Length: 169
Ligand code: ZN
Image 1 (tube, rainbow, N blue to C red):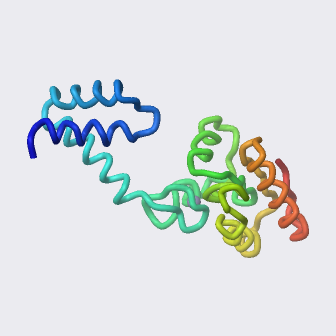
Image 2 (cartoon, rainbow, N blue to C red):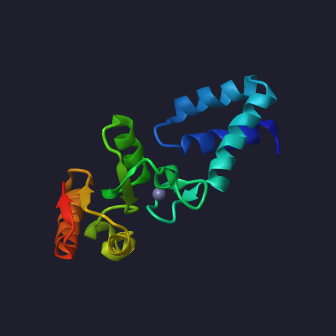
Image 3 (cartoon, rainbow, N blue to C red):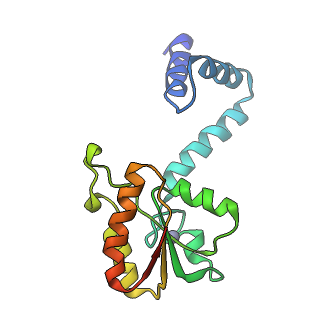
């Protein structure tokens, strides 16, 4: 492989990342070319280790490095409340506010007929199972306030309310 070719591969790969156009890709690639090999290796290792070590929590489908995520494993959390979100990044956003201390359930998306995503493609069955065997008093639905998020929220409210669990938005 020639030097030009390996630089081109790096530029192509960087350019595929979200929010990085050709100019930014070029800036990062030249920065890496000029940095020492240890710095480049740290970045490469960090990328590989999230891919190898991070998976989904077996209970709430947040990101986890063990069987359960840090929030599910935290015994100081209020285990009677579940906040339902679309993606793991929504958990991070709510955690940053510091105002919620219950548990979460990550759906892995939202209902979107256009993208052929229905309730069966999301972790809704697992949510209902949790309501069956965990002592949950309240479900707070925190999907995004767009059409898909609202559709998902009303579907969940219709499904959960008959189980005798309080549902709020
Ligand atoms: Zn979890």
